[in-house]
Length: 436
Image (tube, rainbow, N blue to C red; front, side, top):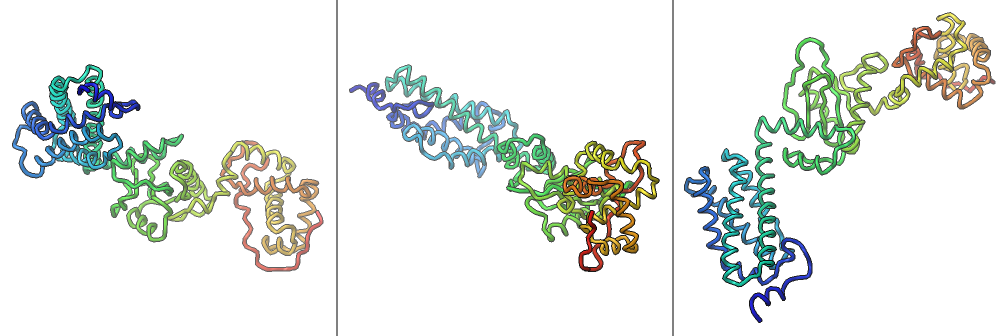
């Protein structure tokens, strides 16, 4: 059997750049590896000025190792397409990093791979003619070799970009881009986030807590007394500064953040999966807006998860406004003072489940006054006070507070519904419920 027939006979049935090649090709090419490696290195030095200096020391060893690992892996994959690429990829990833640190350009790095491909193909053509390989096998070999070199060049490019991203100025830029990508709506693909995170050395968490920042003073630029933890992404420029903390914000983490950001109010969004952090940040910003309006206490640190119901009932201002106008229409003919007394009593009645003594304690009035007001409420709202669904709507609107601005001319405009928050129950008495 001729060599050509033996090679064709040994070809596997599977297709693909390397799996389609005859296994016996590896036996033909393996003796060429040592001299081919030296030839590629010399050609790179001769044709690319940046590599003309002697390749002594660790840098030269890195270049030679990259070439040797590349051509050895190529031949090994012809013999066994399942052979691991991990070690060779690691070498070329480091090679790309070293090229950046040496101050070379991407063009120089890519040129080196093109030279390697050209020299390798030149040698393969000589071996092919000498061994009597058919044009079909040579064509397959060319496709496989070029695809393989492109793959290694891509690995080295990743290493180059990763090293570049981790330089002081570039790292900040890439981390901001990563933060923007994470907060994209709709959520960015997880693969895109993972690739950029790897570039910056940021470990991708399963869950994270976004924090909306608000300068405590309108004058002067907010100070940052300390560097944030390395795993915290942040953006402080613009109208809506923000940071992202992997996982929940624990007590120790919070103390560090407060020390680093002394001139900011922190509104911490709920800890959620990474593809939901844009929603969590929106909730955190909503809570800041409520604090500005006095609906919730404007503390230095606010946790949005403590105010989710407030966010929910105020999530659609137009809807709340319409519902309020419909429910409180019976108050239209009353004075502001009358409206205030009745709605105050209604809120206390709902909170106390009709316990007259409890309502009197909350409002600091005599129980007989409560009974009088309740008769007014019954005359005003009628059967709605007996309907569970209607009572729910009334309480919902009362709890919506002043975050919703009433339309001009509405009868209850100017009435601070959000301030109708009775204090905690002062006494526990036997229930004395209203009949309606």
